[in-house]
Image 1: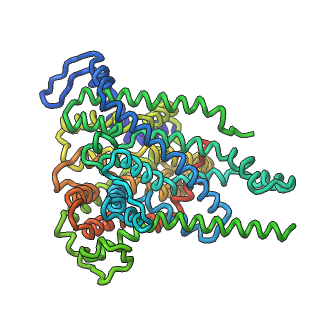
Image 2: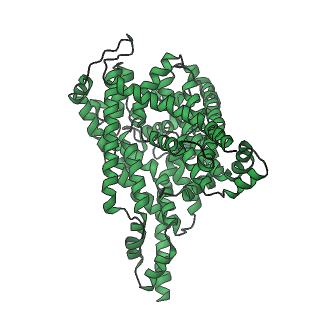
Length: 291
Length: 282
């Protein structure tokens, strides 16, 4: 029976093990190796060139512009956290219509990014977009949201924040459901106001959920790519919207510098890992760990 | 005192309701505008203030759009990829989740830890080598790179289902074993039915991710006959960005978004609950 169990257990996990080995572990190995070569994908030749690729992108002006833009992609996180918490608290306290609201808030999250960008390009069009026509009514000349180097980032940041409010509220709601009602009963007996209850009980007890959301939020934001690719033809005027992932994509599939792109990707992966570890380290200071 | 409390509570409810209504409008209006534009005559598109209910209503775009872009090919390709990944991938994921939760085999903990670790690897590190592998075996510009990895399972789904199954009683398993049921039978006739709500939630997530995927098709396919619906819409809108064909682009976008919205509305109960029980504490 035991041998039987081992056989079935191994058989059941074989597909996913194969997937992880073939489509993740082997590719990571190839990426690390390729990062040290001058691979261009065309000639089939690859020579070991040591750290040259790393020197190349670290001295590339566009890499640093892309790095700055990538940091800007972190801006949506506090926005969707704030509105997500607000929405979750509203649903949790049983505001009328919560069920319907919850579905509506999900529309952007479940829709494809392609359709959303089509829509946003249309709404934020300089000449005839809904936003600028609305601003014109109150006498404001709206900016060139999609063409102007400063505003294109704002447009992308706004869209990401808007898209993620719904899903954030669901995670926060799960956190709210975990808070025992007894805390609130005790607070009410002590005569604590609603605001005080929120800041003394709700918010501290939500910190594990908020921590989780910042971890996946930072990892996701740093990898922003599809929005940039869809909103701009070439990373925006003066590379104003290009992120690091966009830079890597362009090097790999635009100019066939596969070795250079691999080196950048591996370096970037290490940066993400480092940032995540720092977040975990800092979390000890602010995340509530249970009584 | 009691009366003031009720008043405060009522005011709170009114404020909360108003805020949520405003928020919901922000989420929904763009979509309503999309729907409205898809039903407009081209010359009405730039009217301001916009006509929310167009006059006349032009249903023709929903017929014409199929001739203007290879939308049918895109939808068919997306359907093939999504159906295979969702059905077969869910089977392999549930099998793995069952094994990790309820069976004993050597190195179980280590294998599971490696699976979870792979979730940390940024996609950007994987796509270049994956592209090279697919180029070597002749998979570029076919649907295979979009299908085959998904057939073998999904690590996130395995993680969530394992957590769920850990919460199910092992006595069931022992009882079934005593009655002589094989492990496959125990998985298929006992655990699979018990996990239905959790599986439903994960199916929506995988369906959404596969149907809406843009990066995979963008990198691994290039000819129109292998385009998924997302690529068709993206190239259509790029070509028509500066022309007056907005109603048509909106029509195509609505057709692409519809399947997910329908599925989500039907099954959102499971989807929302899945986050509640899967917990955050890990």
